[in-house]
Length: 477
Image (cartoon, rainbow, N blue to C red; front, side, top):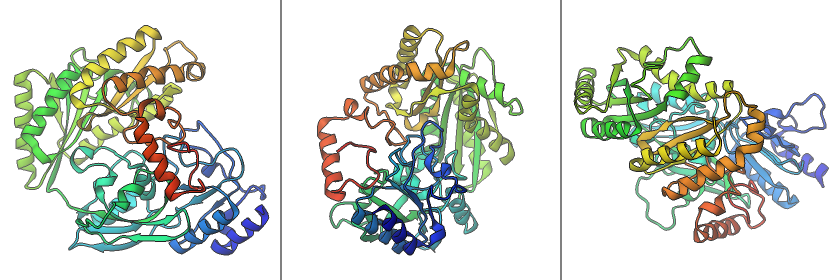
């Protein structure tokens, strides 16, 4: 059966586009190993279709053979949701060859692209046409829009533009039966029944395979300014956020918070980067703000200066610097985006992607910081993230003199339980923008209501009755 399936897949997409372990010269690690190198599976084959018709034919062949399918884009996910298990039975369906821009519609302010389009390339196409596609995240040079939609990715501009879900008007999807649903109309209003688009967005490939999407475009701002503020506490950061909303309104496109220890890792491992106010006693937190203005740079700068003047008067900002040009702005953002890389240089760590109501973040962090320090003396907290939308990357590093590998192996489950229990107490979510994958699947029943889980399982059984679409991810059936 396996040999027959491989031959059938080769007939569909071409012999060179079906990769297997039978060829000793073929290295499948790029498709079998997750981005954080925490897990590696073994695929029956990696199949690389060129178009939607080939995807549909591959799905039909796999369904007939009872073979599970793992859809994969850039494989940059952080929840171990896009690699095969170690059974050697699953087919990885890589969509990277499907990277065409199908249509730019300036009057409708939409761009229709295939799922394998790299996010940065999509941004560039929009920019060259005079428009903005605002989804922006650290992996944008290698992640694909299909994966962004599959996980409902967030990023740095959710505060203004929303998650990937809010940026999508329509999808093309190959169902678990190998049928093609064309929902690419690009309509902003369509109340003709259940919203199938939102069903597939965020489903992590467990209900069907996204092959194309129609996305929203926006006019480019006339000016974008960036500032870095030193604040004495998370309470002050939340106060500054409120002032930013008042002074900048919809112009506030980014609001990031970074703890001093997180920034110290950047200074330690990337000394070529200049970290503002690093080591200052009055700056335990840094805040990175972005203001996009539709009028002019002078207007944007005036509003920014009024905001900071008010913040200084109220005492919620200790020091601040406003980027004078685009190069300085990029340098400030580069510091923020380098925190995960610096943390990796420091050693293995326990990552969390949580969301808390913004108003409750200071209390959550104070209480959870103290809890972790009490339970695991010497533990180091790498706290940073998108404060503007309530999403923190509340990561936990081993004690400075400890064995990072042993810490991860011995403490991860305990730390996760401590943190997730706190998240639940504060009415938050254990996954804000990275998805569930297999990493958090077994934790979900502890923090999601039974009613919600039953509804999710019912949807999974209805759309994928044979459990062949990315099985073992998100919810167990």
